[in-house]
Amino acid sequence: MKVNQAEFIISAVAPSQYPDDGLSEIALAGRSNVGKSSLINRLLNRKSLARTSQRPGKTQTLNYYKINDAFYFVDVPGYGYAKVSKSEKQAWAKMLETFFTTSKQLKAVVQIVDLRHPPSKEDIQMYHYLKYFDRPTIVVATKADKISKGKYEKHKKVIKTDLQMDKEDAIILFSSQSGYGKDQLWRAINSYI
Ligand code: GDP
Picture 1 (tube, rainbow, N blue to C red):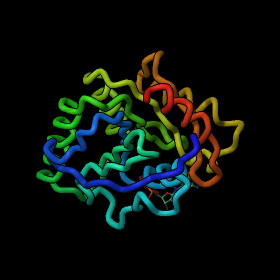
Picture 2: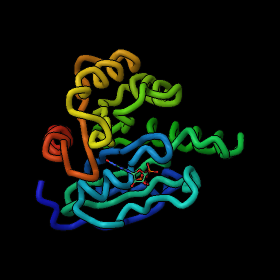
Picture 3: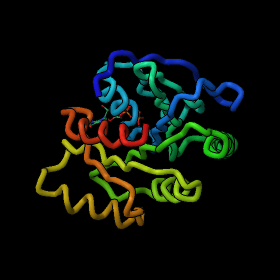
Picture 4: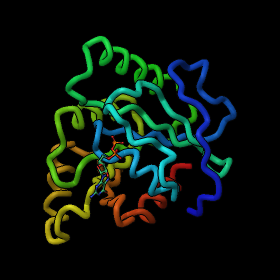
């Protein structure tokens, strides 16, 4: 995918703010600090379009980025940040539920996990949540540059097993640092838009 244009459109909290121009949407979700902003910036060849959050978990909004005037990336606020209060967690869950139940243009969700570690409890919950809402999911295991290639298959298998991944869902190894997996991820995203 050649990204000619990538533009921040809106931080939305309520459906009335969601864009309604009928363009396809691809959401990106992951726990705080997993490397979601870095992945978005790498995919879009931008240094800091998606902001790496100062306080993880703080941005409780859905951030829409319009790509090539053709589709949206929807950056879902990170989960699993310990210092978030119970009411903030509830607000986050409500916002997500509203999004997943009302968004008609959402074609797939990129769920980002850390290749180095088994998925967290929240990662597993999120994946099952997406399956409950019948959302096609592309699992991306990022920070691949931090382990040796010899360990890739073993770590990949742990993630697939722990998430109890659907056979139809792809898992892609990625590195925002090196760009590893970028073409493969774009191909997977393209197949949904
Ligand atoms: P977010 O909270 O999920 O948006 O995470 P960030 O994109 O802010 O990344 C969190 C930290 O991980 C930052 O220090 C990044 O530089 C680092 N990071 C993110 N992706 C990678 C990666 O693929 N490789 C390496 N080595 N570091 C990464």
